[in-house]
Every structure is written in C-alpha cells, then in structure tokens.
Image (cartoon, rainbow over all chains, first blue to last red; front, top):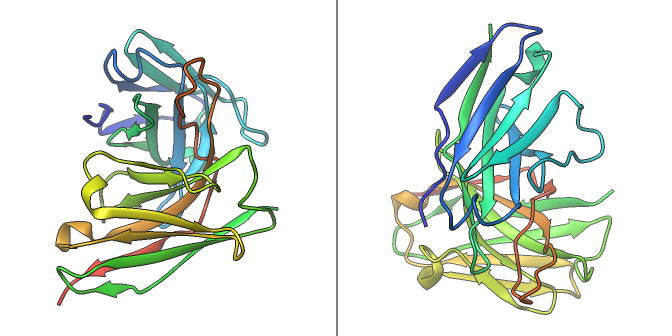
Length: 110
Length: 128
C-alpha cells in the first residue's frame, strides 16, 4: 500500500485556475470512486473539500472541483484567491477496508 | 454541531505505549451512519491513516501499523481511543481523530469514505 503521488508544489496568480494531480494505481484510485481532497492551512486540521471524486460538501466554494481519469484524480481550483494558499492532500479508498493518502501539494498564490 | 476533541499525554518515552482519547460532542458516537478514525501527521510531513472503528467495536487498521495499534470505543462516554505500542521517534506526530461514513459496497465489505469532521489535533512527541 504505497502513498498516492502528488506534485510537491504548484502555484498560480489570483484569478487563475490550477490543477493538482493525484496518481495512484488500479488497486486504489483506479478501482473506486472514493477519492477525497483536503485543504490544510498551517497549524490547522485538514478540511474536506471534495468527496467521492467530485462532490462538494455543503459550504465549500464551487471554485473547487474534482475529477478522475484512470488511475489519476485531479483537484481544480478556479478563480484563485489568496485564501486558497494551503497544503492539499488527496486520499483514496484502497480496498480491504483501508485508505491511503497522497504526499501533499503546497499551493502558492503568487 | 458535532465536534471532536483529542486528549492525552504530549510526551511518551520510547518503547512505551501512546494512548489518546477522542471525545465526541454535539452528537452520538453510536450513529449507524458513521465510523470514527485516527490519522496522524509527522512534523512537516503528510497524513497517514492509522485506523477506524464502528460503534459496535468493529475495527479496521492500516496494515503497516496493525501489529502495534488498538482502537477501542466507549459508547457510554461518547469516546473512542487509540493505543500505539512500542513507540519510537518515528511516531512523533500530530494525531487527529475524525469521522467518516462507509459508502455502500455490494460485497458488504466496509469501505472508508471521506473524513468530514476532524478534531483540532494533538501533538505527541516520543522522547526520553
């Protein structure tokens, strides 16, 4: 059970769109529509942003969207805002009643 | 609204057992719709799922930690707990408790859904 692969960092200017990828295998991301995404600001607990691949919890901005193609899931943030600067983690169900997280991506808003 | 709060010692000696408790308030831990999990984050590193429990006592563990982890539930106190034995410096981390559903599975196997409510986290340092 290996960690999902995310880019270490991404950046964008206010108003732009960015996409963070999350690459797994046919045993996790590729097999289940159970990818979730979390936003974490420094010193804070993670916050759920996307669940079941593309669903947004109540209260999460529609600027956040999720998708999946094969073994890779993606989080897209449109209309970047300064407050979006944070670490982002993906997570996937990996079978056998277990989950695996990605290594995290640091988003910098320029 | 539902809140989770971790508690326990902030310092544990190497080879000893780390023990933490998560208290659920604003709702019942005996909800049939949710499971309760532990996740940790070493300083400057990513998140790692430790394990989860249902109010009935059914447990699910990360295979890499299974031999050292015990998660239990006390429905009368609306709490669930984590014990991690034989700790080393590598177990130094912020430990979070969180709630998650178990999405439908045609096979009947318990699936682990998204962690939708988290505690604030508690830092545990392993050091002599």
